[in-house]
Image (tube, rainbow, N blue to C red):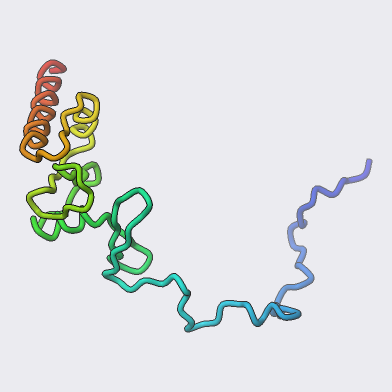
Length: 146
């Protein structure tokens, strides 16, 4: 009975190209990314960009972006938001970044607000009341569970 090749190296076998350096052939060297060059889509830290979904993002470090409304809320309130919290536009306008138009809520509260349609466009005071109703419903459900 003969052993079939399973496509793997046997232990102790050294590959034929061990220790050799790869040298690109042809004209591929001309198109390779060179050390020190900056890509065409590079953005410096602090850049604010708008995405197609209407939200804006700010670059806070290399390879790290954050929602702009979340960044502003943390900067104004001097608090770090938890992972399960989001920042909501009270009047529904994604271009209104005034501090009194931003509210930090939990995702649980957001689920109730969306299900019960408690967020109103153009009236931030009614939206604040909707947030309070969502918090009240969560408290009631917690008491029922206990």
